[in-house]
Length: 502
Image 1 (cartoon, rainbow, N blue to C red):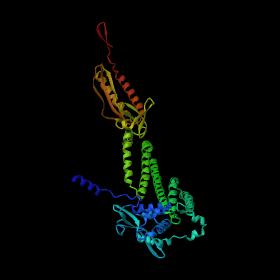
Image 2 (image 1 turned 90 degrees about the vertical axis):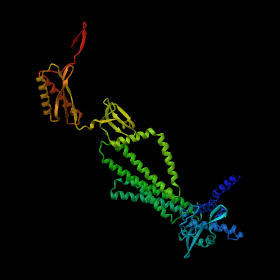
Image 3 (image 1 turned 90 degrees about the horizontal axis):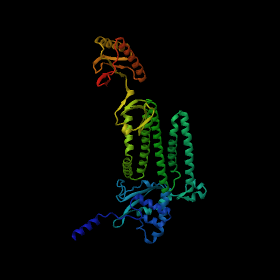
Image 4 (image 1 turned 30 degrees about the vertical axis):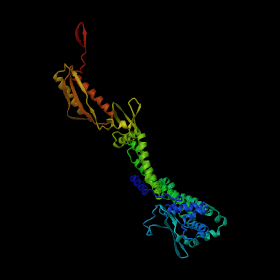
């Protein structure tokens, strides 16, 4: 029993703090929920975000609503930024204020500085909440004097000032829309003029992102003059920040395209695999990375935890990798072939027991045209693991025939043949020989074997075939001039029980 009691007490000691149903757990969430209640015209709920405990109970209902409305006006009609408030339950511990106090907003009224603060109070055990402090509640009427029609608004029709959309006078929305359109048109004219004056042929790729950046930055500046209500302003500011960052990422993507195009123009024409396969892939990866990094930076600035998003992307990437294992294997095989470059487009190669001309090296497969004029597609995972012989990579071609002289060839005739062969090789300008290019290598069953070992100094197969033909014809003539000939294999047959040679 004592053990169970200790367990219950320990569980109670470790129980999390109760969650406030009104969302007053952090300074930022408390002010956000306060404005939500005000914009919904639920000022009775809005008073719950003000610490009215020092006010007489009889005045709380009426005065509390008035104070909530005045604070709403202050936050909506000034340059108050809700995103500057801390979103931690403990508040900002490095702001120089007491641990339970957070700065809400500061106003300049008639030459005096009025600072409104939030205070963390515990309305009941285990339920700490952030409220506008009693001292700040008393200062709201004085700070509200700052809210008044501007000289510009006094000149406008009263309907445009009094009528509100999303708690913002309609004239401000009209002004922002007109400014946005004007900025878009002016930025388009400006970027086009720069392209013409600077004669920048690639400026077309930069025009769109540049216009987005200029329009987003200009509209953000215009919001300082025609500012929407706090919540609407927060949404607009975040949207403009996202647009601006995407515009910057678009400029980076245009630079990547420009660099890739210049690199491609300087590549060897035979490296089509890099031009048409790897380069586009690398370019798209870089561009996508720019956009992803920009979006994550903005989302992180909004206060969201991007580590969860990255973890989700990691898990999703593993799942995709498992599902597309063969595709990824071929992809890396293609990158291996393109990076190692055992063959290039146009090369004649021997792969396995087949020979053909490389037509295309892609990311998934390599296409090869065979001597039969058919095209064979070999998956890169398989192609990269084959033993590849690059026939086009030869700098010279081996001339290595073996001529079989008749067994009745005399030694003098054999010596004459050997001497004639050496002279034939020496007369040919494109034949490279060693110290002993012609040699008698042995006596066969029906012949005397003479081996020729030389190189024809050309990588062109057609030229080699022509030179080889001339060499062989001259060698046959040399054999005839020596009074001998090439051996014919002995054929044996049985006639009347006796072996007969033919």
